[in-house]
Image (cartoon, rainbow, N blue to C red):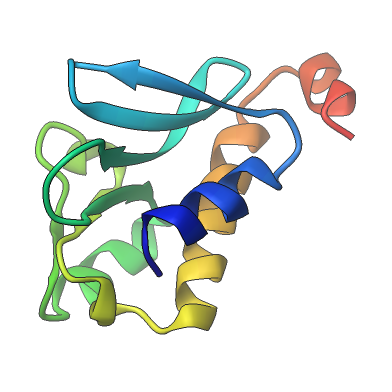
Length: 113
């Protein structure tokens, strides 16, 4: 996965928009809730929300650490793109999206379809 592939995949998910936060972070958001964050400049690193039970397993992998400031909410930071396979990248980005959408009001969720 690289930044162009990430952008293409995220923007294919219903209701996804982009927002720049904190000056240099490109956030992929749905209904104004972020589900994926990457830097606009510098090395390719991505933060994603994961299931609570996956947090420890994923952060044991080399190249994946708890996301600064967001780890308490079960976010990881993928510091090395090779830490995940192409299939895993799509799975975890989609899962992060799904986890965020699941917490949105039902009316908002229905509007995304």
